[in-house]
Length: 147
Image 1 (cartoon, rainbow, N blue to C red):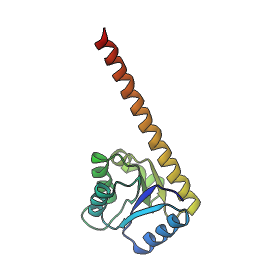
Image 2 (cartoon, rainbow, N blue to C red):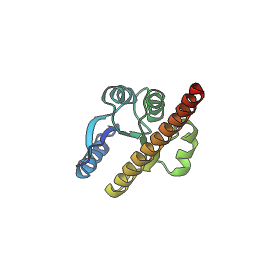
Image 3 (cartoon, rainbow, N blue to C red):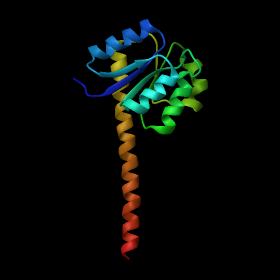
Image 4 (cartoon, rainbow, N blue to C red):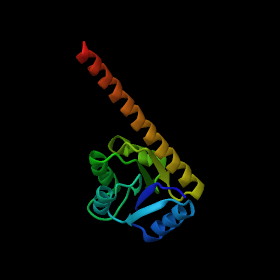
């Protein structure tokens, strides 16, 4: 069983249920499943999942892109964007959302699993790189202070 906690943000109930089942079959922990951008931001802050599966087009005042931006401004959580649109249609949003990954619906369970693993791995590598840069800067400061 995986200990990675995943938040689902999908406004179509049937799609959300199918996604939940795929994640359960893959033995991921689902912390919650919400249908609005506002709830996504709230749950991300409260539950601090390891990864968020975010539909781009959500009903309500806040779409998935706006919700992702608010989450990324406050939290360091990778997001996989879910969309029914093709790459060429999604690409116009890239400067706004800077995704780790995006997955075109419908998708297979194996694709979902690969994207989750890849996103989590890339996120951990990026965090490790940032930590190493910080430590290197700190070591330089300590050496300069000692002299």
